[in-house]
Amino acid sequence: MQITVENAGGCKRIIKAEIPAEVVTSKLNEGFRDINKQVQFPGFRKGKAPRNVLEKRFGKEVADDVRQTLADDAVKSAVDEHALKLLGQVEVVEVGDIKSGNPVLLTLEAEVYPEFELPEYKGLELQRPAVKVEEHEIHAQLRGAQMNKGELKPVESASEKGQFLRANVKVTVGEEEVFSQNRGLLEVGFGWVAGLKPAKAEEQLVGLKQGDTREMKAKLPEDFGREDLRGKEGVIHLEVGDVLAYEGPALEELAKENGFENVDAWREEIQGQLMSAKEAELDRAMEEKALQQVAEKTTMDLPEKFSQRKAAELVQQQAYRMYQQGAAEESIREFLQANRDKGVDEVKTMLKRAFVTDAIARKERLVVTEDEIQREVARLAQMVGRTPEEVYAQFQQNGTLSGMREELKTSKVLKLLRQKAKYV
Image (tube, rainbow, N blue to C red):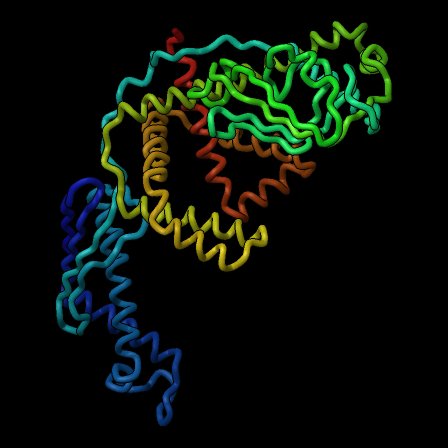
């Protein structure tokens, strides 16, 4: 079998395989021998049917099987001889007649991993904001602990300081809704609403009753989730459901119950926990920004057909989730029709990041050891209350061990980018 590979531009490769006549004849003979062993024809003993009878009855099926076998062999030879890193399925574009004594020319189309040069990925300049724990965040933790031990009871009168509201809350910037919560719990007189601090906030919730509405203006914080909205003025919209009074142990009692000398010591503990959580969250944000920088600086051709197939798979997965959630068949059909050609750009972005990550891992020789896999399995097992052996067996059965390995490798790459970055 003679193999040639042509670069058709981008990630596309054309594989041509010249199959000698004797190979084609041999494959056909094997196919008909197998059929003869399996099928008994009237008037003939099993395995003794003449070739012309077999060809008349099973000629097309055997030729199709041989065509696929030759294509598979051609792909394997192309991979071995030309070190191709294939993506997705190889398509048969053209193939001659499969007949005994005839050579065959196979033409296949494949997509391969893109070839590209990594830009400099160490010393990336990143802006890392200072982490700050707000008073209202600590207060929310303390109040949450109280709610678990006490009880909220409805009152008929207008709200007073120290009481609570159950309210539907939404925050808008201009015409855009950026936050919403149904029946959120708000403390009257505390000064913060939905993580925002409106003017005269301590008085804003006083005097409200069931069914009342109120609007308050407040600036979005500098660490708001969306960078484009940070520092902009928003409007808090409230619709009061219930006015509630707390009955239960005081914070001083709970502090001692939880092993703290006083409420201040408890606050200090909560502040440290929140600080650690915010630092970890900021680490992840820095890692994402670093990888985004590297990906944006990398020039590569991305596989078109593979991207289209992956995008279609993501749409199908979403449709399946809709089905699981009880969506009507008509809604699912409309969703599939509306999203038939969507998502390709998003998939290409994901693929580019994955290719860049893989290239950095190879260059830095970042590998995931079996010990690391076992430690991660043990961690997950503890989370779900099962043994590591059970979790490992489940991952083996459903094929997710490879996904775990890739995720751990990606984490190593992201950590390297963050640690090697320059913060300005």
